Each structure stands twice: as structure tokens, then as C-alpha cells.
Image 1 (cartoon, rainbow, N blue to C red):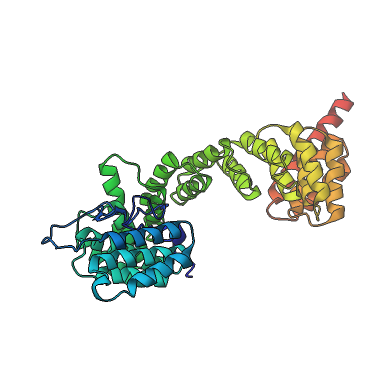
Image 2: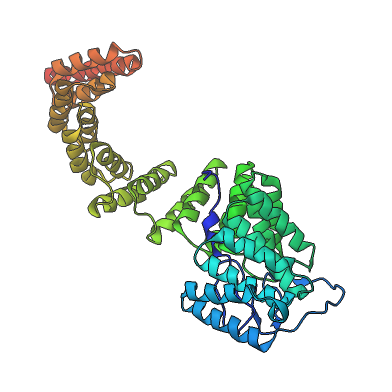
Length: 449
């Protein structure tokens, strides 16, 4: 099946049919409305939310009592899933000749029951043939023909014969007054499968509009199909409107995440964060990728404390793996939130787990911020020893600051000179050397007083 097909199982596998013999329902539908639902001698109106158009009155033959009793017996057996016994009765009735031969209305009921049995056994092709024989019978009630045509259209969809299904559905629509929303959605589904997305969108939006006009909430599957089609056409604003409607009436994680993503496409950062955070506070985000994405959104929107809480709680709940990278994110979040004491032990663990020494250099920077200069010297030195420091010039600047504050001036000078070899840090290194020299001169003058 084409991977672009949209949830066909949710709609077309739920085709329903019932036999116009007894009051009992033959099948229970899921999302599609029942197609046939009748009683002995009288077929009810179509269950596809439409009335047959006015047509000339047909003279329908009577359903004789003897035939009625046999068909009723077959239906009871079919409902008990004794299909072989039911089929034998139907075969016997169909083979009658002469005065006992079935008339057109009796044959219509017979083939309708054949169709029900075949459908129940998932023999869709045989069920379709039987329904076609119902339609072929002359002078059957208009409602029965109309309802059966709708069933035929649905069965073509079940069998994934989209073009034939559309043709039958259009034929049915030409026979009824004001087809209901379900029919337009089925039409949209067929066009979608044929990759005629313009027609698919037009029809599903018509169905949605019909529901809204009656102050009814459109069905979830209709809204998701319309959202997909709008997004596929690049109509992000329309897709966002549909997602807002989905999270209002059908609040699910996927819709909140999609809404956040689309706000991101529109560069609406605060709304992007709000959508993702709403999913989070409802307990919908459980995967590591989702939680980390939320943390990065908090950081991008300058809310580092919440970023730290998300990662910290995720690690404690074992939803986020405490890798060096994830621990670095947590440490950076705490540091940005001025939670330096919480940042240090996390960065220490991250540095120990890292394959290179870059995180030790970052740890040294945090130690300097907290005025733990000896620890800063040890951390940065460990980073250089381990190798892989991404910005050795910056690390040397911080190392020089730590040496300066511990009055190890010669080592500080060497660190600043090493940093100055990189043009990106040359100006800062020279400033620090000048400052250090002026400070040493000041200290020397104080000793001379």
C-alpha cells in the first residue's frame, strides 16, 4: 500500500450492511454510517444522511410468507455464524423454478443476505457481486437500490479500488437529496488515494463546514485529513487553525507537538514553546527527544530554570539518559539560571563521562565564576591533558585568570600568551597581561611605601 495513504483502515474497513428481513441489525459500524437497515417488506431510508430523490412509483412484488420464513431462518443461522447452513438454504431458494421461483423483490432480499454472509467472512469481492445482483433486480424499492449503491461504493473502498469507488459514490450522490457530510468525507478519501489533493481538500472541507453550520464538532479524522492536505500544499496558517481545533476538542500529544512545530515554522517562538509546554504539563511528553526539545525551547526563550527542571526531572524519571551531552545541557541550564552550585556537580559528572577534555575546560569556567580558582586550574589542566579542547585559546584565558587570582603570575602570563596566539583571543589576552603588569606594579609600589 502506498505509504502516503491516509488512515484508510479507520474509515473504509468499517463498511456496514444489514439485511432488510428482520429488525435486528446485521453489522455494527464504526465511523461510517450503516448503509442498509430495514424490516420485512419495507426498507428504511439510507443511513448515509441522505434521502432518495423523488422518482416514479415502482410496483414492488410481494414477499411471500414461505420465502420470508426461509430467508428468516437463513438470517438467524448467519447471525449465529453458521454460514454454511445459511448458504445452503439460500442456494435451495435460488434454485427454485416454476411457480415457486423467487420474484425480483424476493431475489433482492436473497442476494442482500448472500452479501451479508460474504462480508461477514471478509469475502469482499463476493459480497460486492451479491450487492450488484440486488441492484440488477427490476422494480425493487428505490430506497433499497439507493442504499445498496452506497454499500457498493464503500466496498470498492475496502478493496482499495478507489476510482470505481468514486464512480459508484458519485452515482449514488446523483440519486439522493443533499448527501450528508459522511459521503463527502468518503469522496475526499477516494480523491486522496488517487492523489487528487485539491478535490480531497474541497470535499473534506465541505463536510467540516456542514458540521460547523449545525454547531457540531467535526470528527477528528476529518480535521486531521484537512490539516494534512493544507500542510502538504504549504498552507501552514490553515494547518495551524485546524490543529488549534484538534487540541481543543481532541487534545492529544501528537497534535500539541505538531502545533508547536508549525508555530516554529512561522517563527512564533513563544507560541511554539507554549504549545510544547502545555503538552508537558499534561504529562504527554515522555520520550527523551521530546523532553530535550522542550528544554532547548526554554533556553532559546531565555527561561533556563525551567529548562533545567525538565532535564533534571527527566533524568530522575529515567526518561532522559544521563549522557555527557545531556548532563552538559543540564549544567548549562543551571548556570544560565544563576544556579551555579547545582551546575558544578552536573558538569563534573559530564566531564568524567566525556570522551574528550572540552567539558573539563567548561567546568573550569564555572569554577572561576564561583571563585574556586584551584579547582578551575585542576579542571582545565585535566582538559588539556585529556585532549580535544575545542577552544584552547578561551581555556587558556580562563586558566590565566585562575592563576592570576591565586597569585601564580608567571603561570598566568604563560597562559595568557598561549591564548594570545589565537587571533580570536589576542586582544583579551593582551588586556589581561597589561592589567596583570599594572597590578604587579601597584603591589610593588605599596611595598616601597
